[in-house]
Length: 470
Image (cartoon, rainbow, N blue to C red; front, side, top):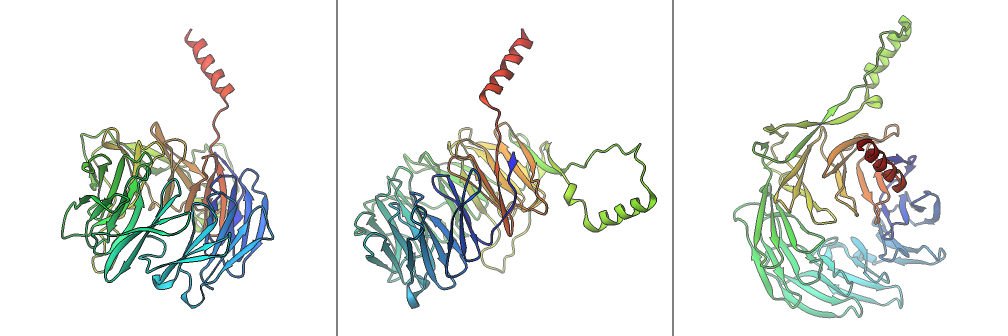
């Protein structure tokens, strides 16, 4: 891998949808850089510190959430003099997002009083009363024609279907939830999944006309759904819950066809590859090296004081089953216990998905949906902070707030050292075409690229192998 130098950041960083630009918040300044050269393309100054960034789907506009004001400012990449400022007054702004047409901004007020659709074309605005959530509870179809917005009135949850062309409410239907937690369109726009709060396990599948296609309850009298994710192909729906299991439903009958449990011990028989992160000490031959006594004492003192992090290396050791994974007992007297499936995401080809069980935060599980079996488990020294699939292939990259980057593919796993001083990766993101990887530290960021051999080199290597075999 190749890494750039580190650049300053004090807030959110995100790639443009077309993968060409990188927006970085530095206090009240918005810095837009070119992804290839990382040169500054545009520099905008907001009226306060930037708390949130969101690119328009066409990569032409970018909005900045200034939630301390509260206020939203939008900028144009091609027209630097153009600007838009949205202020809800006493109602405040809790969250803002773009519409699929990149010409409207949706803001949710504090205390979920209303959701407002602001037009950048004619400055008109449309209100939807009593949205259920600030950042959740809104989903758009893949073709960008319709929006599903969750609302609550008279102690009842509803789904409002709006046209993204006229922003008129096309239909409203009640959903059978006690406290709706989220909504998501299927990738083929044929169904809407709704799930209840953590206090009750309930997953509901609705058609766009409001008919309930399926109601799924895995169990009763326990904390329920924690994560929900559609596969990119739209054929599978994965539901992670607080009972440390993932259940997958098919799109034809909406029945459960597989259940993946996360046991603390992995026992035989298993086909899973188990990788454990271990220290890889430097192997230096110092038998012929002579140091003065004073220099040796100074080095020993500095080593004891500063540690060996700057020169430390790690690697993966392949382990055999049975193996017991590190786990922690969740605190039962506090809300939102660290238990259950807190991370769940599908690969771009819908072949694999990864999970993290929150009471085993140092283990990352990778499941093969074709074999309906565990493909790999990666056991880290530190809790896993973030993970992301390559948009083009089943390559998974993740971090643990350490100076290392970790990578898994169906052919194996590896650890990569980030060659920047005092840089600990706390978050990471791919750009849309998979050519660049954003790595964030607490107050800086860098970019990385996976260097693959050129086609001519691959052909040359193959010809060499063929000639040797002959």
